[in-house]
Image 1 (tube, helix red, strand yellow):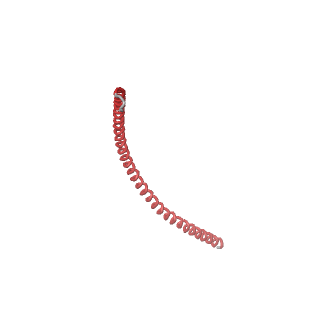
Image 2: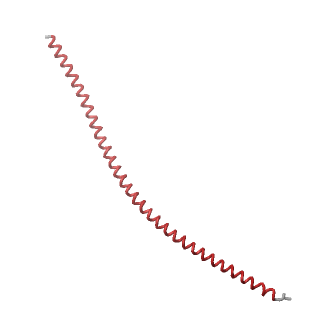
Length: 121
């Protein structure tokens, strides 16, 4: 009978140890489930942030394309203005050369006329 009593006590103590271990494991599982819910929220927020970032990147690409087209148009306009300005500068230089020739010719004509006139008394 003492062996039965010792065996029953041993089985009871093992049952208590099993119950305590099950309780500890149940608490750990609850914490893991709570962490899982937190992780799901974090993953959901990350997915939302990723979607927002993708939309922002698409918007930036559109804006960059618009800026590129605008810059290209302005560059073409500036090149046209530069060509027009170069043509006008060239025409101005031609006019200045002609004025220089006229002044030189007038100076040559004025010298003989001045030499031919007697000084005023």
